[in-house]
Length: 195
Image 1: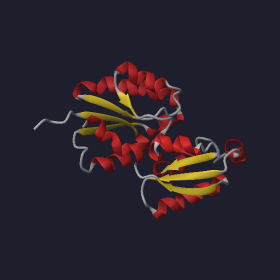
Image 2: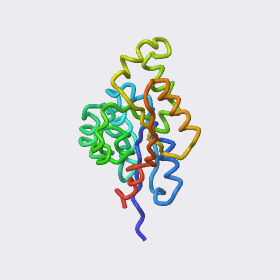
Image 3: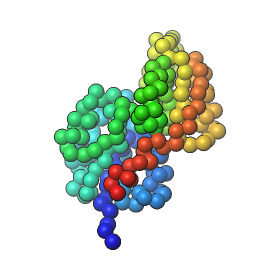
């Protein structure tokens, strides 16, 4: 029997819970997970350099490395870094697109929607409210969110408490609320890339 190649999944910390949950199931035993800090999203210019450092530090211990990030605001720099390093990465502009499915997300063209995932619902204050200064300057709310109409909660799990928290986030932002169950989307397809 042929052994599957050892794969390092180098991921955004915002995806850690979902990846660990999937990795506990069948088909992921040949994968190891290393996550970079989720708060790099507040400094997207630092994502590509952090990914490069992690790939270079860990790649010799694996047959392959897969970067579990979309572009995430890097303006193509992450893809260029991955290309230069010879590693693959998730396609798409951000995790909202690969949770939803890239084609579905693009077809919806929801420019006036603000998205939250399970992670962002749990970490709303730490990743949205406080970094934008809304805890200190609530008058900025309309400047940041005045062009949005709807908060779409892309639920990875069926959790009534998270849904209630997401509804509260929408109310705090003054937006209509929609819950869309996405599950793990295209994250679930990662093992098939290395079959």
